[in-house]
Image (cartoon, rainbow, N blue to C red; front, side):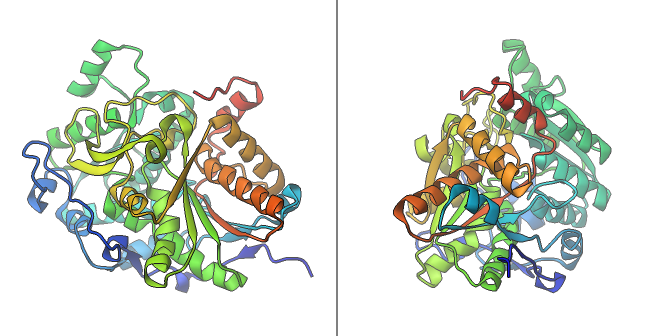
Length: 435
């Protein structure tokens, strides 16, 4: 009998609650600070750009936050997502390790991002918001929010980092298809964008710049609220449906992971796969090793400094306690656009500080080598961001082979790369550089 390779759940297994990891950590997370007063920010301060219901969720201390039924109904379009065992990759690597991956690319937007885009659109609709402004790096978040806004009858305006705007035209077209307005950032549509372009007409942009433009857009347009696809607590919490499902599926597979891996830029997909397993470490005293994987040219957790910093370049966001490379950092134009962010989610940063997670960084050539090997054995072409997790999983499997020991590896395949094929073309043609 062949080895089982696919582990699925029923719609009854879609989680009913999101998990708030901050309820279980041994030390409180330092609060966000007001950008002007430098005092802890209040609910009233945050409602200038976010709806009050999401701000309340951002600040909650509850362990489990109930998922509204309309959100679960939309989740059911693609959730639960499958857990698969990469037996062909194991064979290619000649490793005793068992490699499992949670596949989040099996939805209309093609990544994990709808897990938070849908509830954010829902809560905005409930609060009376008419229009949402946001930023996007590689376009996964912009695509997901465009889809979610259309499902709830909201307008959507996206500021897309300019290098990705040109590198990834099909993600931009996907946003247009779902009715969004998309601007390459820095753009000529905001005061901040025009200021940057005046200083550097060829500026490739950054997520920090795009955030600044989206926030300026928000405060200048009545009926508009801002939405963020990563970093903040409520965003990371929404993603924990991934890890909750994975725990059930690993149990169905009859195994428990020794190591859990996720790529990390702002922190959302990593939070989704890892936070429920962090709870196992905190509450059940499990020894699971949890690894965040980032690009070497934007290595926030491995090279950044833990301190208060702005989430955007124009210094308009609250100050967040996080690992950061500096809010004015402009990363090289690597193809993993979703990982080109100067800061790390405060929750992820806090877990790193407490020693509950590890971090590694890779050059993009090594990442694409792993992506191609995975695609040739498992069939799925991964997004450049997700391929960072694959690289780390392969290295873990090689280490198990060299040690002659079985190791159970779980990673989050956060999205497919079918709209990133120009990145693969650059790799195959030798035009892909490491920095």
